[in-house]
Image (cartoon, rainbow, N blue to C red; front, side, top):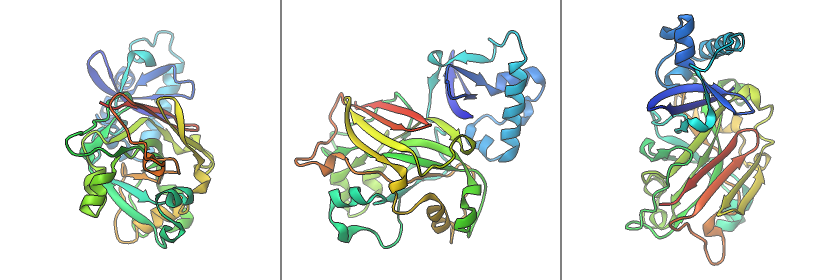
Length: 301
């Protein structure tokens, strides 16, 4: 299942679609028809917090809809829906892994910069935007705005001191994230947070894909295009630290909760890695694509 937060005829809703992505099922409308409205919260974040119960509800509603002759009241054509970020306002900062692909480390420095331990930074919840929304240039603050296409993990159940061997049990699903970064702010302030947390600097979506759809998240092609030109292309199997170890490390002294978002790092090909650097400018269109998940497209304004 592919989960979305969208707007249809002025109303925000949460829904599911399939791999074909032609129609989106409005979960609230469908549940209302079968008398299960009270079982579905208003936001996808709250739904994820229901853990396995939410998946069971979705399966039951999907099966019910498939038996109906007239489903137009709760099944929308995807082109008629405005897709927001699946979790438009995370309850916490987005957790991000830095320097997690060797070639990216090398383009930004040298082999000596490969981290001995997992590097973590965060992005503010207010930075999140959805597919087709505009990345803000922030020309008054930066002239080195950069892109970083990434696979992101959505946590599905609460856990602390999680062992790497069963860390994947705590995953709800996956989405695409573009870690837009002001490189000059990073350098100026000697830390990542301000340069990573500008408003509209965290495009995410358009879907959260349930983990059951993806057999191995470490075998996915990931690519980034700017104005149609491929800038990044790699495979998630090239991560230095893979998802189980990331989850285990984060949870050693910190409780992970349903709906937490973990961006797993970016491969080589970022703007700063070119000579001369190729930073984003007004009007640029950035597309991040991850195999089996979809394509995230945003323009720079």
